Length: 526
View 1 (spheres, rainbow, N blue to C red):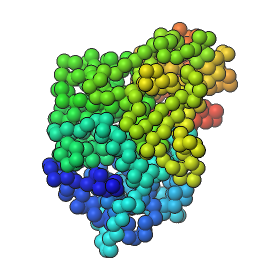
View 2 (view 1 turned 180 degrees about the vertical axis):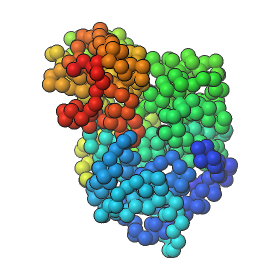
View 3 (view 1 turned 90 degrees about the vertical axis):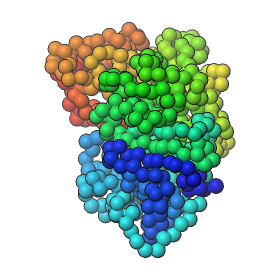
View 4 (view 1 turned 30 degrees about the vertical axis):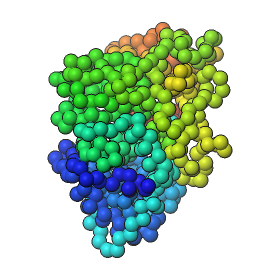
């Protein structure tokens, strides 16, 4: 079965809602409009086309049409906040040269800001959907090159065939078990695997005749969520959605910024992934929403990556998520990891049907993944998996009682004061200090020591308050990890470089620090 067959509209009512565009349509209508992409398929003769995916009706139409026509796509990350357009254009041209694409599809708003590119033709979604002429449809030739967001390295593209994506969607649907009356609400960017595959493509397949037999998809925008985090939960209530997903920070923002708690009793699967999952966040979300009828067993911590299309492990809906103290799941008698024995680690659940997960070595080690959706190669031709089919994720974890516990990245472990210190744990403890912006704190290595960089709330930007905040941050890290950061640097809102999906670009930040390009507030500990 092709991906086009797998997500094709069924015979039951399936509605697609775009609240920020004040529009809605039935899926069959959008599918028919999407057939215009057959003209693009004919004009490029099957060569790849780059696409900067956004959460708009026009983009979703173009995406569905490309899948139906069998037009290979190359997903280009959206420009990070504040990125220089000349740099971004050069970045796009590098990706296009690597993947063989000579055309880029974008929102009109983005296309109008890009300088001309010598080797890449830029077209808006609206323009390409109005093309006329000969149409070619070859659904079996669809492929999707999924470029990672580059939070710790330059982006690299995993090449996924339609069959690989179908394999991951099958596992997700078997895990989720869609039922009549289900519907999805999401603000996650389509440029990210959890938004595209987990929320949109999985929903389009799940509302088909083989599964739920109808349903809805509500597509909000990441920008709308950041402006008003409560809009996500409000939309879940308004449309009676049963499935949603967000990174850890999304659940934090939703409960911190919401006023009236919305009726969330219909939510039965709230996937949590894409970044470190904190027990405190899940507990807080469940506590704040309990009077709304929300069932805490709907929270489903998960683990996955672009190289596997998306999902690898997850706690099933209806099963209460679990966490364990580090000392209960890992053998680290000498404290070499830098993780306190009492640190709570959230389980990301067991592998999805058809997937295997193991640890390289005994106890704590690199997470290795095998499954039917693991990409065969990257865009530059390098194989994704080893000769035995295992993908080496560079994530650290342990497996206990069939559950995966993720501890951090192998390339985010710093040797400080004679032992390993995990950047993710430094950041988690720093985030507990009042005055630090949610999700905007990062630890980086500093000549055998540690530097902590954080964006602070507006009330902490004057020199006396900034100094008090910097001292509090240093004291918190010393108290939790026994390591004192050499520097604690505070910055204003928007200073840290981010990927399109909101992750801090650690290596870009390190380069900015080395070149003294990061503007820090007076009062920082330098």
